[in-house]
Length: 399
Image 1 (tube, one colour):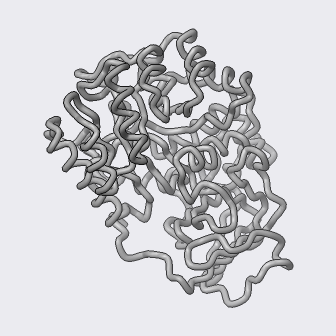
Image 2 (cartoon, one colour):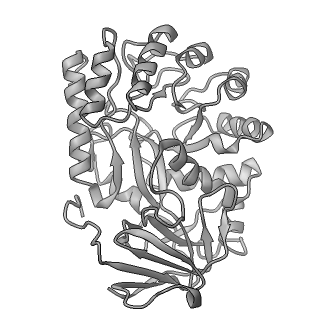
């Protein structure tokens, strides 16, 4: 489906997922839960446990996981949407739906920068941000939750502009540094105004991404003090290792690793964060659509790369793409906890993987096979058309 304005959670709907072989929580402190059943009511998680101990009666939708794993729906912390499920960057339709087939159920805009004729005057950029916030709230492509409306700040903005944006529902800034505000002292003031009104900020990090953008080095990042160090591994060009190390050690903000960046720099960041005992700061994005294209499996590829080459257990790497981002971004999804949104990805090891099971296969570098995605307790996709085929695939028994 191209858009999903109609399929919304029914307050009386009851979803039961039984026969779960592995339940990943998204929580670094307890990444694997001892449970085989999830019960959801009205699009939210109501119970987690053993089937004999939870109320599974009168389910409107019953899913047999067939021993596959269930994880929180994956979160892409860094995308650049434009309108609906179309991107002019690659003139491609359906990139969000394809990402859903890669297990992504939530996306966060880092700025709608590829919008043709993107206005750079203050009135225009505010209007565009409010439009995107409204549009993606009203029409969710394939049911995917896309938090959009992320203005790129420009010189001349004053505190009242941020107040106006917040009152209109804007909660994000686009990548600081993609507009005319590139100096650390200018960015610091505007980031502070945004934070005052509850707007979260991300800063571009590294070399220019496209003609017209510029270098943002460690000194600018540290002075600006944005909430998220956007693509700390470069988008695409990374800072030198010593600057990345400095950012990890001297700034307590989020460390965003993206698919469309420098893989070696991502692994360096991971090693430093691990050495600092601060893996909770690591979150994942694709930074697409971009010149590299779109990456339907970009988040899964990052999980597998960081686990297999970064010596991180797969269940921990999945937290980078779920619970870490949920907590940093203040989302109600991304964790398997009672009360959270019922957003899930069901998956298993790919057929013929050398891994003994899902986690082993991911730590060997293989992508899992996605068998189903669920958003707000509603099945949004079945066996993925993009991942390798899963060994075990869930089935809808009822509903």
